[in-house]
Picture 1 (cartoon, protein in one colour):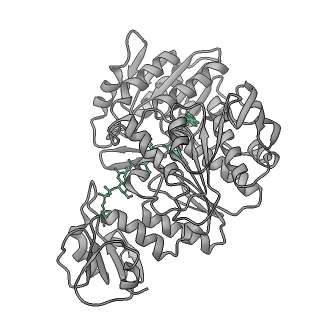
Picture 2 (cartoon, rainbow, N blue to C red; picture 1 turned 90 degrees about the vertical axis):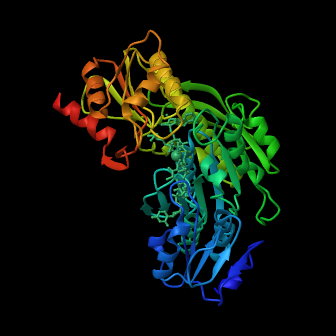
Picture 3 (cartoon, rainbow, N blue to C red; picture 1 turned 90 degrees about the horizontal axis):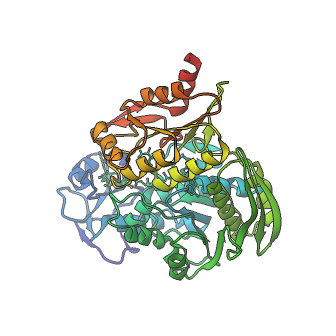
Length: 486
Ligand SMILES: CC(=O)N[C@H]1[C@@H](OP(=O)(O)OP(=O)(O)OC[C@H]2O[C@@H](n3ccc(=O)[nH]c3=O)[C@H](O)[C@@H]2O)O[C@H](CO)[C@@H](O)[C@@H]1O[C@H](C)C(=O)N[C@@H](C)C(=O)N[C@H](CCC(=O)O)C(=O)O
Ligand SMILES: Nc1ncnc2c1ncn2[C@@H]1O[C@H](COP(=O)(O)OP(=O)(O)OP(=O)(O)O)[C@@H](O)[C@H]1O
Ligand SMILES: N[C@H](CCC[C@H](N)C(=O)O)C(=O)O
Ligand SMILES: [Mg+2]
């Protein structure tokens, strides 16, 4: 595609320099630039890649998109906001691939990964060829690749959709983070079904208030049904029991399906029974009733399952066909995952890294154990500091003993994070152990028959980020090794 043809899609731009080169691809990282590419400069939080425009030129770039003048000898297109322009250009350059897909977006503080994986298993079971984009990986049919963000930048996202279409994938199911919505990473995506799991405190380092955080999530729903998009009808799937439900319902022009635990919801769970390794209920929905037995524990997973059935119904899948595959669904790695090495107590690895997530997982453990609950938990560095004392308080209130330890301290002093956590605890039993392996060892050595050790916060992660270095660390492997050596 010629540069000037590509630019037609932008509402406003100014070209400096001569020529109308053929654009072979778009790149937003200087190392990914190949001959003939358009390089997009972004003033990021870490790096301002305007300073890398000349390197991109040396690497073969045919043109540069920027917010200010850069010193190169190829055409430079100036726009007010390159991040926004990148979303618009990528969507156009890759032939609007999201318009070809049945696109499902899941947002919310907790449960996005779990819910997308459940929807994926229901869709796949019903013969739909799916792509999945989220925290764990990007899955294109049978192929998996590492994901660097829960929601990729707009260029990577449109390239991914394009690849999905080329592989004959007809539906994409993706996690949509509040960061992504705020930064316009999903701008131009033609969602058919948008799912809201819940809203609770997190990311207040990034969003300035809970209202701002909620409004960012709301963008997924207010953009749904935008007349620019041709596919219809659109569905918003909303957790009726969450405080943000009403705001989101009001903000969307799409058809709404609510879900929850009361008969006021369109999809609700009646006669709910929660047990140690399964949950059962009678699903009541506008499309009929069905008994359900899930092979994963926790009330929060009942919500995730209800969201998945409602989304599948919006996609035209009969309720009994959804339930069939929800019942068969595998749990997600690092979510309420047991480590069983023959020890007489339970060890559970869980990705709870927010106050609400931790409270939910501990309530579930409380409901299934008579023994003591020992909690190993930390809070991420360079992330929301306000959640630290709250998570510590929850660990102590719902557990019998808590050990605060490192969870990706990043560029912060790990001990400072633990001290921030400790502020939330009054008169309860806890320890600070900076080294996560030592903390896990301490917890496991304390555990007696019938107790539960919860190792929270890292779930599927196989690393510990200290400073800018990424060290191998896997809670599951560490716990297994300690138990074996006991
Ligand atoms: C704070 C934040 O959200 N940052 C995100 C943001 O970074 P940024 O715009 O500041 O980019 P930057 O790293 O300064 O780089 C600027 C530009 O220079 C380019 N560059 C950079 C380095 C270089 O050597 N060469 C080069 O060309 C980059 O490709 C980029 O185009 O845009 C990038 C691309 O989309 C993201 O990868 C990056 O996520 C960082 C890694 C991150 O940690 N983000 C977290 C907070 C996040 O987004 N989390 C949510 C999930 C949260 C949840 O729901 O729990 C997520 O969706 O992942
Ligand atoms: N519906 C839910 N409500 C509250 N807590 C939940 C829910 N589902 C899962 N959790 C808890 O949150 C943790 C993370 O779940 P999951 O990975 O599905 O969330 P996520 O929204 O994808 O997180 P992230 O923002 O990091 O991508 C789980 O390990 C569990 O403890
Ligand atoms: N998506 C979340 C994951 C947090 C996981 C936790 N282990 C941490 O590093 O804080 C974030 O980027 O804030
Ligand atoms: Mg996730």
